Image 1 (cartoon, helix red, strand yellow):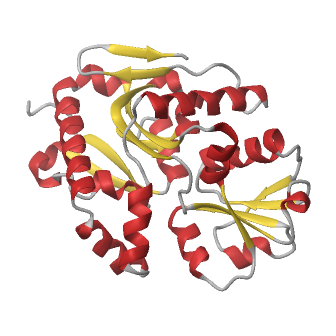
Image 2: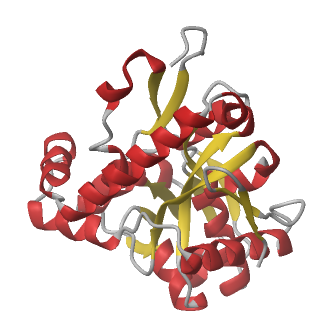
Length: 287
């Protein structure tokens, strides 16, 4: 590394759903050339957008809003086909009531918020009233018909004896579309690619190696999750097994459908290409 090269700032989502990619990432290998910054998705999305973070897993919707700023690192995502267990709508009574009722939204992720809007409006013909609230189930749902929680907050709430009905948004998306749902992708600032291509290539390779190790041996990740959040070994084994961190043609197809629906509902202002960086070239996927 050249002494004059600036530090590469790597964002990390502070949720367990990225651990199968990040858990075995060799931070020490890169020494002082990188800085790890751990944040919830909305903070990481904002800091990627303003250039304070160079590379990291950002929400799929945040990528869509600023896709001209980024390249996507290939073969990396947070996706699910069916149940994801950590993107959950808790609601009273019936879905028929909540789809036109009042729903409290987490402030933690734009992708899940807009997925909920697509599901309720496009698939169920609803038009609820939304408001944002800190991620505490019982505080959020007081005086409301439903509450959306994501990530570790949703997992913790799902373990409680809360008495509410629960809709897994990923499961509902797959049920109506037959497609994968991709919640996050690994993006990199175009400026960082231009100024530090070799380091970015090394980071990408190490992320992929960490993903392979995380997939082949989940025991260390499961133990870390139990230490941090509680729960049983069997719960976390199933949770991580149902997540997928690839970004193949099937995940791309589902993500482009999500973008199309978001555009149809006015949640996005234009079409979104997938600008995928492959070390030496850009691959653009539009359909």
